[in-house]
Amino acid sequence: METSAAGAGRPGGGGKSGTAKQLNVGGKLFALEASSLSLSLSLDPSPTPTFVDRDPALLSGILSAIRAPSSPPAFSARVLLDEALFYGLHAQLLAALSPPPLLGFSASLASSPGLHVYDLLEGWHVASVEWSDPTDLRVLKAKVIAIAARPPADAADTNSPILATFECPHRENCILAIDPVTLKPIQEIGRQSGSAAKSSSPDRLVHLQELGLVFASSVSSGAFGYSGYMRLWDIRSGNVVWETSEPGGSGRSSRFGDPFSDADVDVKQLMLYKVCSKSGDIGVADLRRLDNDPWVYMSSGPKGSGGGHGSVLHCYKSQVFVSRKDGLEVWSRLEEQRDDTCNLSEQPGAKETLDRKGINENSFRSSYVDTEEDSKRGMIEMMEGGGDRLFVTREDTPVVEVWESSRLAGAISLA
Image (cartoon, rainbow, N blue to C red):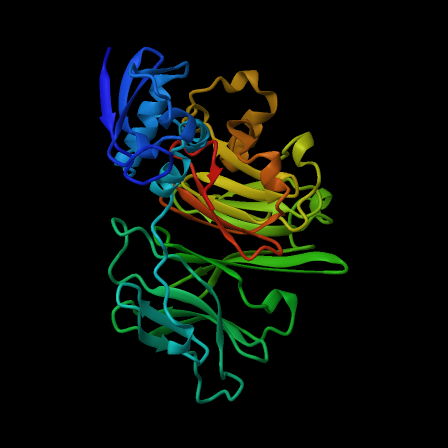
């Protein structure tokens, strides 16, 4: 038998601190501090190792995660947390798996509208960027609506600008390119009056560094449903290279009454995704093959048949997360079909779709990554990915949930 010794380090049970307690878990011996175990295990008076009829691999995984939380776990976080409840190690494991505390700063450091830059380590205000135009008195007190995420450090160009949407009180708006070193505006892109839906402020920006473009989209909803636009701007020239608007615009007539409620771009795969507000279908288009009707549509099936009203969509790590009334759906693209190794002759409709638009709709699969209890807490209204975690907020709930998945499946809420 193999013996594993580990101390959890925090009081959590009824034994004396520093007293070792031996457990025989499925034939494998573990030596743990009695103070770290649940009351029933720590108070067992037997001098021989207490036999526990459970999987020793799970306890090994729990102890490894507590000792080295940065190492990839052997099991999903949900499985380990459920098992840790039995041993009284749940609180310690949860603390080890949770992200470090957020470093905050005082909002009073900057009171004027604009883009503000902070030093998170020191907690001080570095600079402010404002949109101004001495020739246009309407450009005043512009607030920031959206900021394009910077490319990863290993891919970022040091001269790559920071892109942000600014909007004035009278709805005038533009995308401002900002020098990352001097933190000064260097270019104005897509200035609009904001007087109509097609000229409203973009509420999503995605920097497509590889193509030298910025994706901008705007969505509004009201008594008559959703309306919005998507545009691709050339950063150097400031010109629009492609755009579409819904409802209306171009595309199949069968989709005219089903405008999108949200859209995002997979920067790595250069794919554009949208969720339809009425049907809830997912539309996907190849950014390298855009035309008047570039969309291929995919349906979620019976569980996602509630439509896409209120749905938000977020692309992260080659997956597409979609919030729905009945949970969080994730779409993944199968590697073997993306590489064209599947037998397309067995898929009648796929060959035609692949030839015309470069997308095989049969290469996508969807699943739900949360539980029924999770969905009862409310519909997700914001999402953002970071590392192996997904940060989400729900409607009418002032809490940020942190979802983790080491294998990008079977996510679990940690907060």
